Length: 507
Ligand code: NAD
Image (cartoon, rainbow, N blue to C red):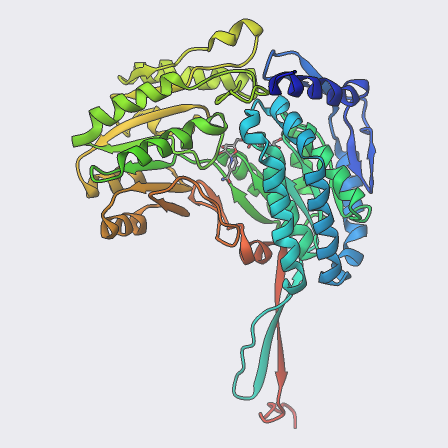
């Protein structure tokens, strides 16, 4: 009998046929179309560096066609009763689940993320659609704010066509996190996925169309960030940009969108601390520390990439950690046994490995890893999970987002120092605190510069809660009603009770 790995490889071969037969196009106004220029770019395999497929590089004409389609489709989609949008979005969720295996295998191949995590990608994405589908009928609801002579009530109305620009780390799930609430709110969408992982975005576009999302409501333009992405953020028909990616790209987008006064929502980088106090449940803390930096190849915005560990337990904790890190299984992303797969692109691999030299030059120790993994013979972007010790928070490995399976351990003396070190970075996305002292846990949580804090837990997401960061980690929040605040305009309607005196001029 074929192993699960062999079955995945065979599935991958079958699924790739369509992408190899012809270059991947855009999805505009209800169908896949080639680009209007002749230009293509290569989508490279993280596994062996070979070409997976070729992709049309969207240009101004493609972006304009997509934005115009979204603008045309907006009035009817926004006017559709919320109950109808709910029905259609649940069908999208059904369609995602029906193609779960296809999504998982293509996502793994394209991004290098291990199949053990990507097999959940469809489930999580379908949940996103169901969550916002259920809220669509009430999305317009607002507040009643009565005054002495007037009643005031607020309603929310869909903003218009919006751009969704996503990165390559978990592309399918992340895009649904933006597209589902936008569609539930009544907005139409133009999605620009990352050029390093474009495959599954086309599946989502197809699934949405098959589920009954009308033509023009959900469009997709492939292309390079500096070209297609930039043009989208400048297009006058686009009212807002929901962006997930690097902080520097966020700055560019804010500037690009300024002339047309775009509303922006940014989910950017992180350098998240996990603070382990000496009274913590150290077994659970160790599991969480390992999981939150080495799962998803460390290519995860909420990864806890800085381990702050109290001095008294530092050496013992780091020893146990080092043993675990050394045993992490690096391998082919489609092998269910793999815990860390190849990094998405050779450029990213070189960036990540470059931090080993930086660590050493700054005086830190490469305690584990820091080298390409044995699979390097294949030409793939494999790296050994890496642990830096002997570090302090002023070093570049403690300040800069590496975005790979790389952890920097730093000792601290007491609560005050833990908070000071945790906050001494440009970012402020997530923080993790491990202690059995409830009061200390809450004191630290209140003081951390982070949009999200988990106490005695790894990143566990509950969809109604706000997701987003402070400082260089972002602007705005996703989740629950927070998403609707971004994708909708709040309007106040003030109605007189005819009891007040209207001022008279010229009477
Ligand atoms: P990136 O910023 O390089 O690219 C993200 C997307 O922006 C891509 O689709 C790219 O083509 C596009 N883009 C690039 N330049 C553009 C421009 N000038 N105008 C418009 N679009 C442009 O990010 P990446 O390397 O793909 O992803 C990794 C980053 O994403 C990390 O910093 C990570 O922390 C961040 N991230 C954040 C979250 C979060 O929720 N905060 C989640 C996942 C990833």
